Length: 267
Image (cartoon, rainbow, N blue to C red):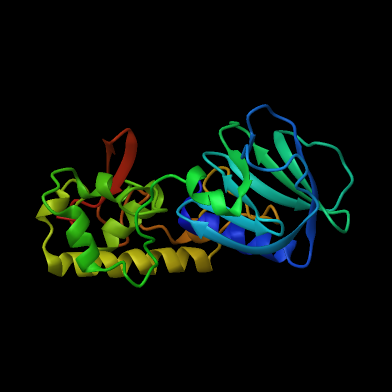
């Protein structure tokens, strides 16, 4: 599933593609992929692109006429810009027809992804309850201390809770905990403030580094130009046999997800 860096990379590409354009229409090729706000008028297109932003793992696109589009890629969704006149391609679930005869195809092998059309004023009705953005200035040791207080669950599991921290996923939490020298099994409420300062710092650094490398491509992730990211070349423990210091990497299961960590570096 695309995580924060991949979603941000896609938003940057989509913004470039949509700048100065309008959506002429939206075609849906798979039932349930496109969801409409019942308060929307029957005809919402054409609509001119205004702005974009990310909230957690959600893409939010704002258009003229009080129209917003929420895209949740889920496991295998991707948005691909295409100027060809070819009809639906393999696994294409929906397609935005843009001015200038270009397209923005929504391709999703597993069909779990969603595109939501809603009134901009109703965005809150269609978004889940999400925690703080980890790249926000307010995301610091004190915030972590607040949300982790008295928590007995493992820190790895807590960092994946979208109601606590928005946008983090399995790959990056593995990497963040390694760089923070924190064992993924330690209860969140037992981590001292001194280590939470390191955790907050490494969270921001890992995410910013991943964004600068256009995300991680291990399976399905592609940017809007259908190219892969590069951060997989810089992973230190995720799906590795040894850490950068040469110690064997252990793999365990936590909340049905694989956790990779170095028992030596992350005591």
